[in-house]
Length: 259
Image (cartoon, rainbow, N blue to C red; front, side, top):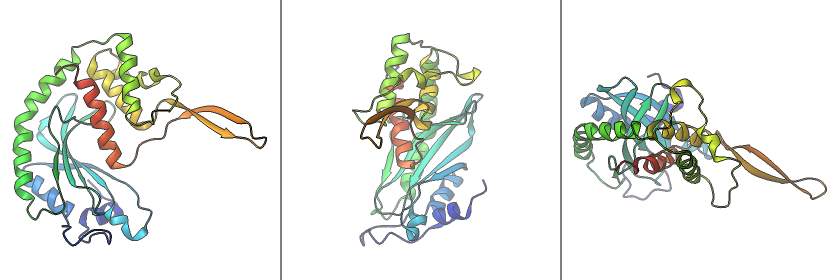
């Protein structure tokens, strides 16, 4: 994978934020990736958040997706999602993921499928934790695949499709947000997305929720102090922390139906 200068600076960063304490330990992301490479993984993609302070751009939250050659399937690949930062605000986090070829949709599995590993930046040794996580990950994938197959063979009613889409949208919206039609999140955008099973519906809705493929109410005041109500598409989620959180919550909403 070719990295931009900013991505490279983030991955190689070895300095901590001025807001962190003396106990804070830098977990160099490249070193973590190298540890995964020893286990056979390779980097598939990377995303990162911006920083309002120019001097902190290399300490931003960043999400690295890694794949193993033995975990490639016909529909997609299972992945490991590595979330790290050097801003003193978040732990190093590892989650199981899946990328679907049809839409390049990256799914982060809920803790019910595979528990998240958190390593605080005050821990001196993290390599053993990585090795243990990889062992658990590799031994659990067959169970995860079985649950996903069950999701593919379980059909949903129209009521369920609508209700689950509403719950999924609620993972990123405030309680008082007014959504025009939650069914927009369930629209079929490509032939591979057709179907009323749990798996296919979850993929449609997860993509819509993260990318803002539904309309919500927006109110503005004109020059005569009149309230103008319009409906606009929700914004795309770009913060890695939110991408992981929403992804996991949406996956749990659908996956709990087959536990």
